[in-house]
Amino acid sequence: MVELSVEVAGLRLRNPVVVASGVLGVSVGLMKRAEDAGAGAVTSKTVTLNPREGYPNPVVYELDYGLVNSMGLPNPGAEEMGRILREARRVLGIPVIASIGASTPDEALRIAEALEGFDALELNASCPHVKGLGADLMSDPDAVYGIVSALKSSGYRVFLKLSPHGDYLAVARKAYSAGVDGFTAINTAKAMVIDVYARKPVLGGVVGGLSGRAIHPIAVRVVYELHREFPEVPVIGTGGVEGWVEAVELILAGASAVGVGTALKRGFEVIGEILGGIERYLRDEGFPSVESIVGLAHK
Image (cartoon, rainbow, N blue to C red; front, top):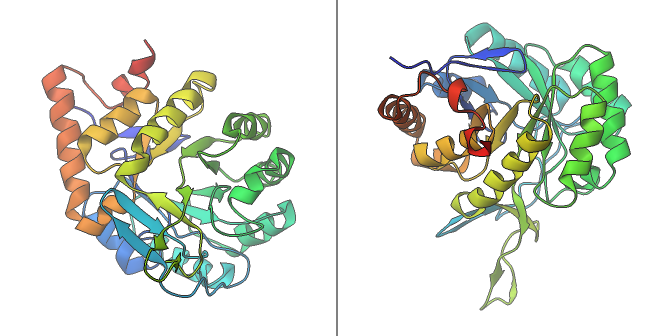
């Protein structure tokens, strides 16, 4: 019998599979289905202070090796998401991580105060297709420092979701000095698809984010570098986890848990398939637990 439960920044998860932001964390019903399918934690869709409609269709384009999306962070705003998370807290038994999008400390605090029922916040500093939020925030490490500091001063548990672009280690250092509890890596990679007959970009938002199998080696590299520089800071490794092999690869690189997103388009059963594979790997290779293999690729 192997131990699948893990501790991530003080959160006890029954297993290391976390539903990544932007996929299913938009309603209590979907979060509950993720829990029933076996997820160890669920992350909400990124919420901003005020509601956002997002970009016009099409917002998603499927490739042979992943998805490109340009949603524009559509969400009902902090007040309505607070209602959803309160209900989620009543229904769910697994930890809920609330993803937030903010550009200033005051904005982040106002969002956090409007939300309830979450176990940790995930600051989205990496969405590649919204001006003033996400990846734009990562271009200003001092701004990240200010937001993380403000949230930590108010007693929140904070994860910082990083982009694979730019000097993410410099941003991580700033967040570390501000007391960040953990990192989530990576968000999607900035990308574009052009219709060769229309001779125009396919997506309504023009520029989108590439997710899925294509970005997995990039995620492995970023997680490896984060764990090498901040071995005491837990990382939720996210990017191209299509099955158990990719999940184990991220854990060996240094991830304490793994985020699953694009693969869920195949259905909730993907979660059980990944968990079953991790369990078989641990048993067959003679390891007692998930935690016993975190960062082993560094030795």
